[in-house]
Image (tube, rainbow, N blue to C red):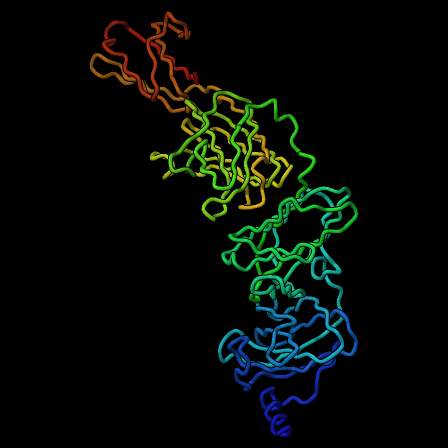
Length: 478
């Protein structure tokens, strides 16, 4: 039986009987081997890899005649050590992986059925990039910390037994060493569609949570003791993500008492009816009446078993064109959205601008020459869990009417006994019309004949009253 087994193994793996020594180089072909492994649908070959000395190694398929892909496993056709999907690998490199001395197997394959060709596999020593392994983490030096990253193109170095459905996807390692004993909030938000995959591992404990965000709130840390954070995924999948870490004490907001107060405080099973805006069953807004800024409260809570973010909405009504500027700072990762009310209210509202800010950092939204209308500022946490409802934010408001610009083109058109005036729009709310039989036409009450809110004015019954008439139109934003 042993002899038959060895004969089948040789046939399955393209007839190669010599193992490749790591580090080293080997060549071969996947034609006409057929699809013997279930990793990819192309014709494949499994190369035995002999590692004499434990260490970190990188594998390259440069020089192959097709879009070769590679998996490394502890058994033939397995990918439990490293797996590359072709987007990262192609004919480039497998990420730097640690291999203890021993025997492994590299599966060389193609993502397209019936695809095959010659291959060249090179193995060389390497040094892990920051974040690739637990011993070479990405160092978080200053809080608050926010990063957008991806585990794609990285190796799977950690399989955590405590994670639901495992954590066998590629991972990234982070480390923060606090300078004082305090409490942290740690939030991981997955940024692609497969929200069930993401895993957040903090000091060896796996957090899965629900929804796109998983948070570890109020995490107590000790001065000088490193906090180890791993972003991982299950099911062999890579994830795009945002990771935020911030200090809960001391509070980073100063001067809240000088601004108008938004007193709402959410809690679990809270029904938001205060200034819930378009998020509420009945839209409710806090209307701006000229205050310089708002000191508000927001957070996350659970309603009927569903994670919720408490949103605050503020309404601004402009009768004329304006310049606006808002600044934001919060004790949580904040998302500010500046909407213009639609003709049908919330249903067809238009997003003018938005901004994301990490905790305790400033961000701004500014718009020039906004036309008249109704606008809404929405303040909401970026994440769906882990934000205490007493967390505060400040946003300041600066609104300035646009400088008045007079029309640059005035057309005078007689119409029977009337004279009709037309001019170009300057975005003003009101236009004042003045008339005089002589020049110059001074814009004084004695020469004033009327106002218009559009770009046309009719001077009725004036034809024949004077030999010659002169007009001036001025613009005004009351």
